[in-house]
Length: 104
Ligand SMILES: [Zn+2]
Image (tube, rainbow, N blue to C red; front, side, top):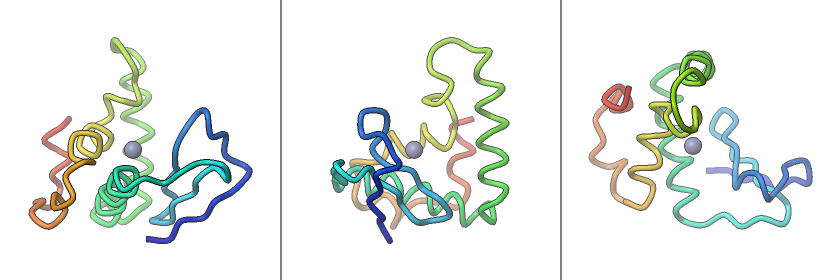
């Protein structure tokens, strides 16, 4: 996975952003194995959704979840799957296709 460190991302707000499988990280930030695994899970989800549908679904689900309780971002199915398995280094080896649907 390609990681680009940039001064255009605020380190205090986020640790990384995945753009079509390329990870953008704050210049003064740190990419841990957990963050990398989290982003790799998102890349797998993106490939399943032909990238563009991942972003469309992500945005629509975020909009819908704004009306619920708690953080809309944390309740997005893609994020729930990635957060739950980000510490499991072998997760992607045994993950079934479209696994994120289970987290809807
Ligand atoms: Zn994420």
